[in-house]
Length: 372
Image (tube, rainbow, N blue to C red; front, side, top):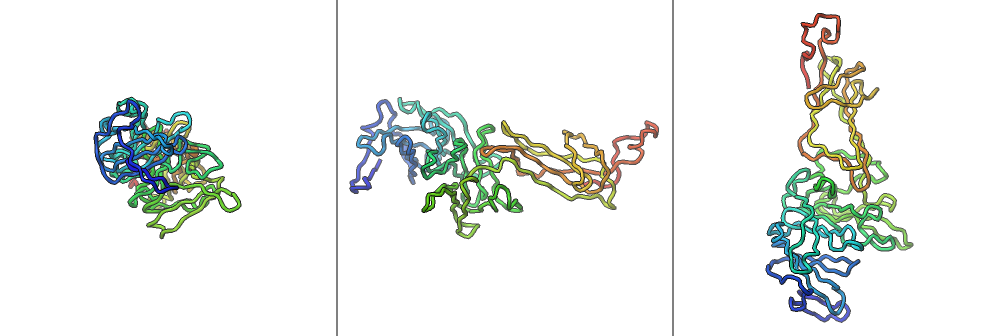
């Protein structure tokens, strides 16, 4: 493995004869290698595009670096390594626990066994070809730096160091995303098409939309003021966006969205609604509540029906609105897994159904006229 001294220009080749004692020998070749650096532990990660395996160069900046071979494919992580990025959640206390790009997934690994010649231990796998984000072998996850020292340039969230960002690649995940440690999913919108965003939440303004990009990164101005910058190119015309340090790169954990207004033909009264909710997930410490209104938001009722049951309104009205209200944090929030739409079935009931004095022979659940 090549190394160059940037001060003197001297070129060196690190070979397997000075492996870390007990490490397995390199047994696979690849091409288009990528380098990552863990500056906390002075480790370079040397990754092959083709087979997903990687070499860890320990004590990389010293005169006596050591090589540790990590065979990801033999650990069951595939024979490709296009999924890109490195993320070490706790480089100080657990430097061997890390997220690494592998075949069609990002894997959370314990590389401790590699130091004695064994395969890495697979702790979690975040697949790129399963919902909610179907990237199909085009994905990046991780950070450039692993430190959370507030005095340094960083791209980790200093308050939530487990937050692993996932930026855009090949016009996918154009609004950025994150790894959900609870559900083992890569969360993010495949594209932004037909998406209208709030332009005021937490002062962020409109999200940065890019075809290719990196995770938000914290810089400092000439007078030492920290700020976050987002780079990339493609959709937004090769521009960049800047956020203040109090906003940072965290999620908008508390959010809400309203749908409607929906009506029946002839402005008939809306007595009931049934929502077809497809694949919503609420991480630990978060909540998702759904409210419905038949008077265009004049009054809201908590939607509690499930399955084929219907929510019966206590109020009178002919304009349906539906509201999702989420409570989350900067590092996780409720989200929808599937790309399929939720649905709303609503309508009005026969007067006989609502009048308890009419004989029982009347079918109480019959729905009149059209429904949407």
